[in-house]
Image (cartoon, rainbow, N blue to C red; front, side, top):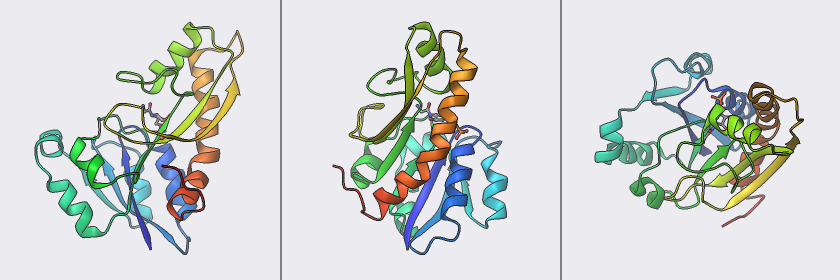
Length: 193
Ligand code: GAR
């Protein structure tokens, strides 16, 4: 089996969709959910599906490679960032080349970079008077939101749309596409590097 570890900082609705999508899959297994906040809603979904969860600690994540060793020992093949807001340290990027995938709630390279996450992105999109926005699925490198783009999908932004409405449209796109795009990446139907 191809083993995924999904990293989550927020509610984890994308992670929940991915868990559901792969729950009966013959080749792909969601083996681990990694959170950096104890209240992530995805923890109960993971429990229902008997998926192990880790609550990681900031200093251990940045100052040691203990999590890397544990990920390798478990045989994790891909790290999936589904609303994970900590920067991925260099040691992890080099240990998983083109094996770390992030979803960003805008059309990169617009509205990316440090501090651009969640509602902040949608507020910036509305403030800039954009006519469209969307999602970007991309590989992770050492810089925030700068790894090679794998997939994008867009939606319109109406002049009357609030950031909350934009967030809803973007979430719908994420829920529609993320798991299926991941499937293509991890089983090698699509190759991007
Ligand atoms: C998603 O919209 C994701 O694109 C975004 O966080 C949200 C998490 O939602 N990620 C970023 O902003 C990363 N820069 P979820 O917890 O409901 O899946």
